[in-house]
Length: 234
Image (cartoon, rainbow, N blue to C red; front, side):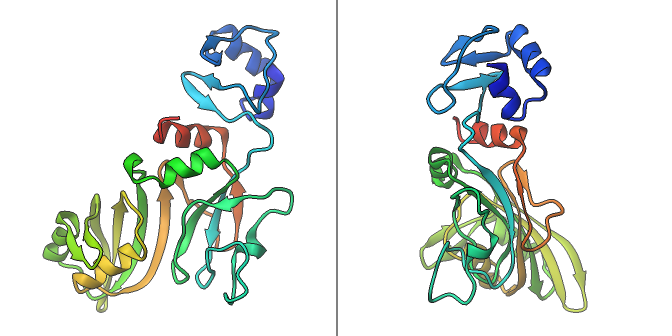
């Protein structure tokens, strides 16, 4: 059991033993004991009441998708797809999409259950964006984004919207969205008279883009994976 926790990133085997001794680990709803055996591909392991990803075959990655890249694994019609940015040692899939002109955080995983829940609207997983726009955002425009605007496929609103910069006829807005319709942020901003010059996704749920440069990727930490599970009720 402690070896499984250590491999999943919960510290050394000794630290994992301490977690078990303290009663902080459960397997299939039962408090784990030292010496318990676990099948990572079948058993549900929880640490401090939150599900832990202990299956060594599951991968969770954060990628800074560059602008100009199509969010498909292989697309003969796309100038550039995700193929060049995927790991060679695991088959993973993008969680949702970013349009070709948008850059920023894209989660990659082969955990289908987690991916499906992250995408389902009922979980309302937040996505945060930084939009550089043409024009200086006014209080009225920011207010409209928060209250909601009417798009051709129905109303859309930002959970939060704030003007964060302005200079020489252009500005920047941070927006938090709870759904992810096609080109939704761009269409909302265009509707209020602030066409997008550049759009970057900074966060998906508890996971942040951080200092990843365009084209770079990293493995999520165990705490980030746990936080994603918690965000979708797993």
